[in-house]
Image 1 (cartoon, helix red, strand yellow):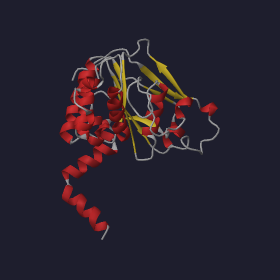
Image 2 (cartoon, rainbow, N blue to C red):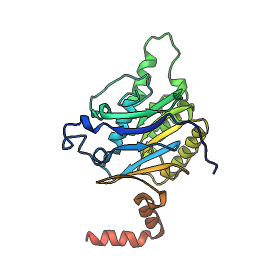
Image 3 (cartoon, rainbow, N blue to C red):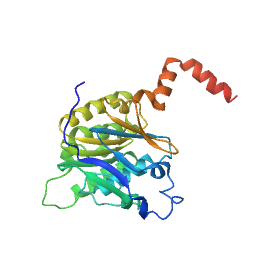
Image 4 (cartoon, rainbow, N blue to C red):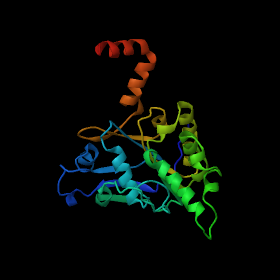
Amino acid sequence: MKTIEFGLYLHRVGLKREGIASFEEYPFCLPVVRALDSLELTSPVTFLIGENGSGKSTLLEAIAIACGFNPEGGSKNFAFETRRAHAELHQHLRLTRGVKRARDGFFLRAESFFNVASEIERLDEEPSLGPPITPGYGGVSLHAQSHGESFLALLNNRFRGNGLYLLDEPEAALSPNRQLAALTRIHELVAKKSQFVIATHSPIIMAYPGATIFQITEGRIESVAYETTEHFQVTRQFLNHPERMLSELLDERG
């Protein structure tokens, strides 16, 4: 596959460690924060991967807030708040941006996408001088679709290109086939000069060619090859030998 090159909108994410009073308190106690010095974003698609609790979603949220997005998700025009639960990590990040600014952008959080869909409906119900918002998401209420269908409606309709898109576990609502469809759409958007930073557990999503994969472990953040990730290796081992792996796992538990 041909590598697509353009000037990235976000080049580097650094941590201002000198302003942090203690690395024993949340969110600074998270492995991703303890290990963070500077992440160099050199590819149109960057993945953050790691075990549950490693802090990848917290870091992505902080990047999104530092970029001007609503903590619960949406575009920079969204300003709703259903529950103040975001950490203050964004105040300690130093972002290095490209010369060109993104003309579009969106922060997708799987866990709060329902709230984004509700806010879209609320805004369309209020009197406004501007056009309704729902047509920009495909013309059908996101609540009138399955979770997976609404995710794809967002990717296919609202994401227009020339944008910075931050996605937190987009695979949460997608079947394997729909994950492949999402990959196709991501590639179309990269061809339209878009940049993605994605936190994921999906070995399908993170297979995007040419992407940078940052793996978060207890003591470090390192760039790794796709085939060396635990996600790829465990999935391949299971698919190649499901009976043997199930036997070992279930026999161990009596």
